[in-house]
Amino acid sequence: MKQATDSRLFSSKQSLRQLGGLFLCAWLPLPLAAGSFSAHIDAAHPVDPGIPWDSLLFVQWAATVVDYRPAPGVGAAFADPNNALGPYTTSVVSLGDLSSQQIAGGVPPGSITLGFAQPFGNRPGFDFAVFENGFAFGGGLFAELAFVEVSSNGTDFARFPNISTNTAPVAGSGAFSGWDMTNVHNLAGKHQGGLGTPFDLSDLVLDPLVVSG
Image (spheres, helix red, strand yellow):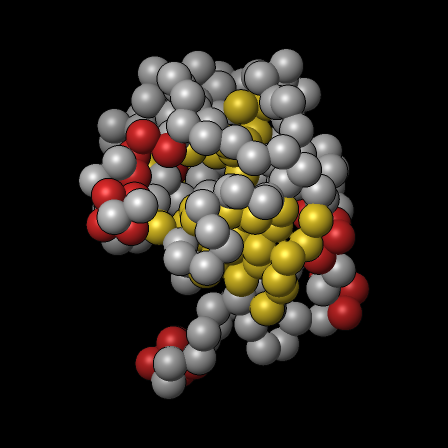
């Protein structure tokens, strides 16, 4: 599994950051679920369902690139941050991957910060979603996961609490190492391409940055 990296979203009063995936504000039988959270193709889970890109729940998409800092080695063909703007497509912008040596050496992960035309806040239910380009493989998901952070001033970012209890890929998933996403929560990229991973700002009500205003 790829190291979780970083990214952001920003509007005049609202920011969101993601490290290691890409931001963009087929129904199949579900695999056996081992954990408490949604599988990579599950759009009906009570906790964290994937949200189809064409859902009427979406009222706006990321409109501007505030900052883009890919990890070393991202090729030019995958380094256009404007691919993260507007409605979901299969075009991508890469934040890059880090080797174990780079991680040990303190090389920062890739990040992207995006802005919205209209600020948004905490409302009942999910407040935004993040799309990645993972694909189903061997009963799991070949995924590039990302931490997600938000800010009300574009400077101080609160990271969503997140969980991944996976210690090995799905047995027999082969070279692409499919991972069980029912063991993953609040990390962007846990759903396959076309399904957005939802986030609820209520998860941050006890974060020190939020409490302090």
